[in-house]
Image 1 (tube, rainbow, N blue to C red):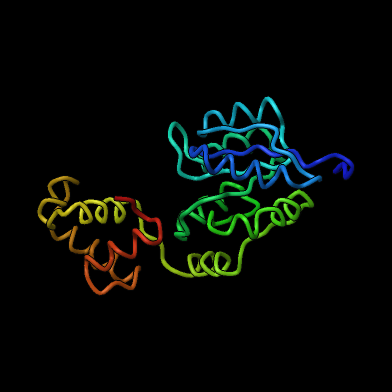
Image 2: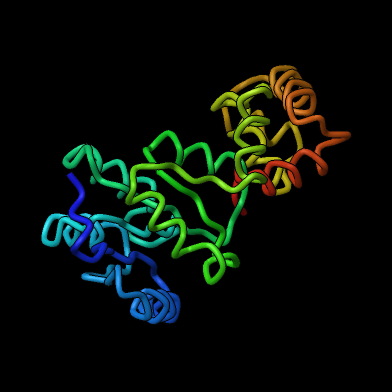
Length: 210
């Protein structure tokens, strides 16, 4: 049962101190919420969650030591009722799906924090989920499209690094014809015109990083 007389207790997790300061300032101006702890990486996030048992955790995705998604999984494995709001500068649909599957209750792009954060905290604390329309649309699109296999992602990473098919084949210990087959499948699944276009799409969607 949620105690409506107590402020919403928040754990803020981000590897950028300035962002944490901004969140603390924004939250500090509200009478119904307070930041009770901060962490600069995923490992610290898990430790701070255990210590403070916050009502809401604001979790960055890309951090050193342990990613936000890994930290979220660790926290939810131990505390199944944890409520996590993912904050990120990145809106690639693959990253969104990882966060949703890990158990995120809401997903906010950092550029929208000043406008959306406080309402999102209150909604998630009240037991609701909140995904902006454009994010919900990306999730739906991702679910509808064919996803790349792990081997196809390996091939795409090597292509992105500038390797020709023969080198990709050598590095993965497969035949060049097999690589060509993977490339054909990748282009079809991503709706790409060529290899360069496929890499561009994959980076934008968060399938690979360079």
